[in-house]
Length: 469
Image 1 (cartoon, one colour):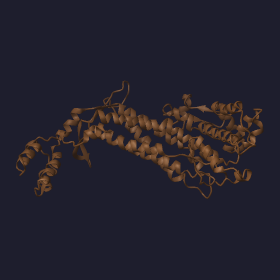
Image 2 (cartoon, rainbow, N blue to C red):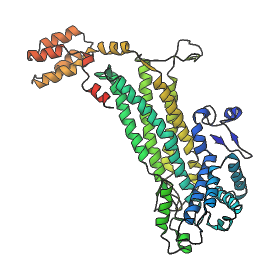
Image 3 (cartoon, rainbow, N blue to C red):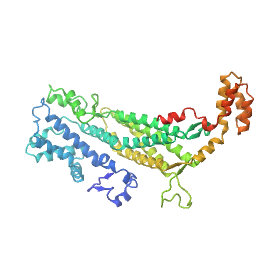
Image 4 (cartoon, helix red, strand yellow):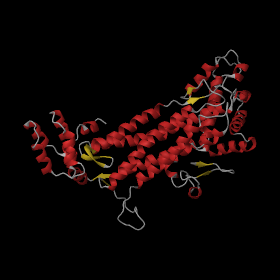
């Protein structure tokens, strides 16, 4: 992330010493994994989004025929305004911070910065009164945060989640037909296929990704306490609701018509909750992958020069899944706080949301680190088919479900109880199962079908379902 100290800027991405002295690991140890977020969610990124909103509002007013005093812009004036946003860099951000040091108000500093810019343009200097026109700080700030969150979603989070979903789908198809012992309560259970297990996670993840992408982010542009008071005082005949709705739409947002001085952040809470549910699914995946590695279903590709233990040379630890799980946990702790805190404000507004909102990028960074680690871990998995089949073949008792179900079909009394007596807490071999089946009063074709059944073939529709992922 980009660090903005009191005197000057230090980009921790470019400065190795900055990484070593960073307090947050997302700016230090993991800085090379969160580079895309630096331009979006840092203090620099927030300033740029605020500037974008201020310029867009100024231009929107100038385009309205209902506000004649806000003169239409020439092409050169429009290009000048666009250039202010497009050419914004660290030095320009520092100029705003220097103004803020005098005003002790971050949004007013952006306004004054923009006024100074327009004062240098002959056509625009007479229009400076329409910078921040009828706005309260939160009109700019909440809209900027919505733009920031949308950009984070489009450029970082959704692609990260989507990359994992694509990998899970590929694994589901590749391993659709590999039979595997299920475990419920940690005990042997009716078989599935390894591909179906990946398909299950893919379906859950894709569903939450769809929810996350569907969250509508909102803009507030209705003044100090949300009622267009100043707008109406200046231009009583303007349809301000329509004009501000058009402004929001131009930014790719929806207008929230009902606010206090602040946009109530319900949409941010919804965004965070959808992201938190997504991460919870991935924590579940990390833990299952870790467990399957531990029992030998998966080996991990060796990386030359990588060390698994400082004292045990043989080890290849499942560090990618562990790293991902840890980062998802930190992200979810933050996301949970955001969704429970941000929608709450004392009366029309208080400032307790300000410092919380500044941590949105931190949560996104931990998500990004987790997505990268998990995808890398999935890419290193190598299935040990022999181990998977061996485990399945050594648990013949899973066939008792099929046997007792056929017995029920033919109205044999006590089907479940008879199989329970035969198998509960006991290890069965093929001979015991065969003897039991032959003792049943069943049609010969049913007996033959049961005798031909093996754990590897007792997988129901698992292969089809995995292929449908």
